[in-house]
Structure formats: structure tokens, C-alpha cells
Length: 297
View 1 (tube, rainbow, N blue to C red):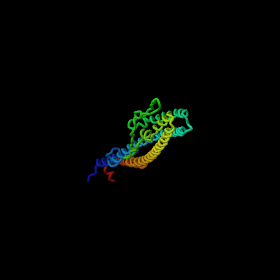
View 2 (cartoon, one colour; view 1 turned 60 degrees about the vertical axis):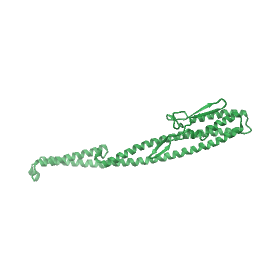
View 3 (tube, rainbow, N blue to C red; view 1 turned 120 degrees about the vertical axis):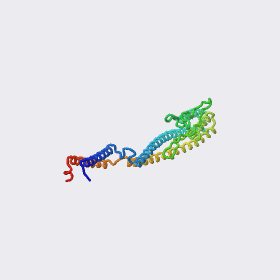
View 4 (cartoon, rainbow, N blue to C red; view 1 turned 135 degrees about the vertical axis):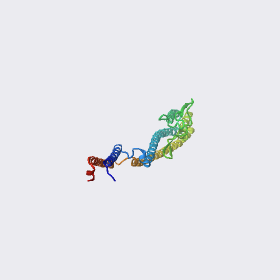
């Protein structure tokens, strides 16, 4: 086989070009921190990384839902605490005015305070949250409760705000974001008990006062049951948040393993390829200056 100057030059130039391509690839990896420039470089890794990024985006939405549900639970817990205080005070007033020692004057004076407690409770039922009513159910933009003065006593109106918002907090897991107004203020009997106590005081009827006081006891029990439910929901949300944190860390590590480089390893590879290219260029310069006799020698 004849070895010509052209063959020698082509071989040396091919080595140099290969070294330049390898050096450029190493420089890209170091500067970008990524293993692949395009998906075709490693289709399997690219597909896995894409799925991991999709899962991470879903986790971001789950986390926003968990935060929103936690905020609503915190707001509801505050309302339930104030409602509990309102019912406790009304019960104290009922107990004091349901005895034979009370009279029409004390009951009339007490009725004024009970009416204020009813107004306050209706205000709690109309608590605003974000851009709607916290207890608005499926109609969060519609005011759920109002106080009505019948002329003889106070009453309340309701739109029966039932239903509530459910949020997806993980794949296949949905949690109720809060209780609706029906559950908190109607099914517990809280508003009705306050109304009935005011009506009984206005009528000066000790038996009716005692009956309304008993209803306040039942309403308190119902509200406390809701408080426990909210506490359990908060615990579930905290656990879900911790699980999301752990899953996010695992997915981020998995994606990084597929996409990102080990910087120390990449810098070492870059230095090695720079050295190899310099050696190839030095050899090329020497070969290109030789004739055939010198090359063979």
C-alpha cells in the first residue's frame, strides 16, 4: 500500500477535527451543565427526564392546592373558635335568665345582648375569603346569610349554601377545602338557637329560655365536632405536604441524574481532551513538515 503525503495529511487532520468536536462537546457540557444537547443524543434519558419534569409540574399544582386548603382550614378554624365563644356567652345568658330569679326587665336587657350575638354569628357566616364567601358552598359569590328584624324579634335568612370546594392534593387524592354554611350554621343549630333564645327572652318565657339554652348546648357540641374535623384535615394536609416534599426531592434527583453532569468529572474530561487536542495538533504540525522519507524513519 502506498503511503502518500495526502494520506498523512488527511489522517492527521481527521484526528484534529475529531479532537475539536470532542473538545466542543466537553465545553458545552461544562458551560450548560447538561449531558444532552438534544433529545436524540439519548432518547431513553430524554424521555425519562421529560416525564420527571411533567411530574414536577403536577407537584407544583398539588402544592398550591395544599396551601390553598390549609389557608381555608385556618380561616375556618378561626371562625369556629369565635362562633364557639359566641355560643358559650349566649348559653351563660340563657342559664342566668331561665331561672325564677330573673324577671322581665333582666330578660329584656339580656335579649339586647343576645340579638347582638345573633348579628355577630351571621357576620361570621358571611366571612369573606379570597374573592368569595368562606361558607358560600357552591355559590361563593352569593351572600349566604342576612339578619331580618320582624318587629318582635330578630330572625335570619339563608340561601342554604351547601356543597364545598374539593382540591386534588396528590394523584387520585382529593380533600374537601372546608365546610359549607349549612354544615356550620344550620345543621349545628347555632343560628336557630341564638334566634330562639332572643325570641324567648323577648316573650319573657322561662321555659322557652331553658329550651333555647338546651339547643345552644347541642349547637356547641356540633361546632366542637366541626373543630375536630378541621384539625384532622389540617393534619392530613401537613402529612400530604411532607409527602409532596419527599416526592419532589426524589423526582428532582432522578431528573438531575438523567440530564445533568457531574461537574468535576466533566472538567476532568475537558482538560483531558484539551491535552489530547494539543498533542494531536503538535503531531500534525510535525508531520505536515516532513517528507515521506522522514515520516517512515
